[in-house]
Amino acid sequence: NGIMNIASTVIFIGFVALIFLIAGLDSKKILGMKKPQKNFAWLSYLGGVFTGVTFSTLITLLPVPDSWNEANNEAVDAVTKGHPALVIISVFITAPLMEEFVFRGCMMGFIKKYWNTAAAVIIPAVVFGIVHGNILQGLYTFTAALVFSYFRLRGKSFWCAFLAHCGFNMSNILVGLM
Image 1: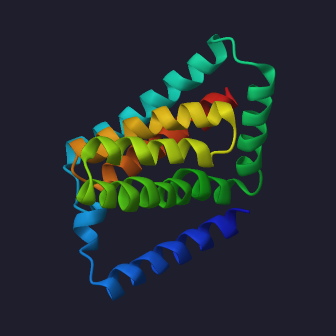
Image 2 (image 1 turned 30 degrees about the horizontal axis):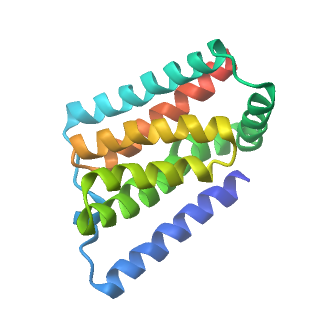
């Protein structure tokens, strides 16, 4: 599972890079591949950690239907089983890289270029929530996507959203282990 996630991420990003190259698109500008400011990069990561801890706490405190929790736990278990090194690479690096590349890189970049900023934030966030496959994950990943979008826009860099997502995933897994 972990090796397949890593391989699919590399292949997908390579495929999209090829499309940008063939189409003559300015991938750095559309994707926001600018190097983030050092302090804002750290703030992005810590913002993701804070968001993840906050959501994990709310999920335990709010009356969430058991079926939602069960579906969420099954989804988390599916991606956290396997060799610990592969899980760490998959959950903390390749999943955020692929998801941010698709949602805050490609989708957000294209929508912002051809439409407006509000649509560029909301549409990828809705799709991001839907693709997570269950109601509870859909709700909190939609909200997390709004936070990731904030860091992407404020930091003027895809990498800020990626770092926020890494922090979010790390905090969720660590809170789950406690």
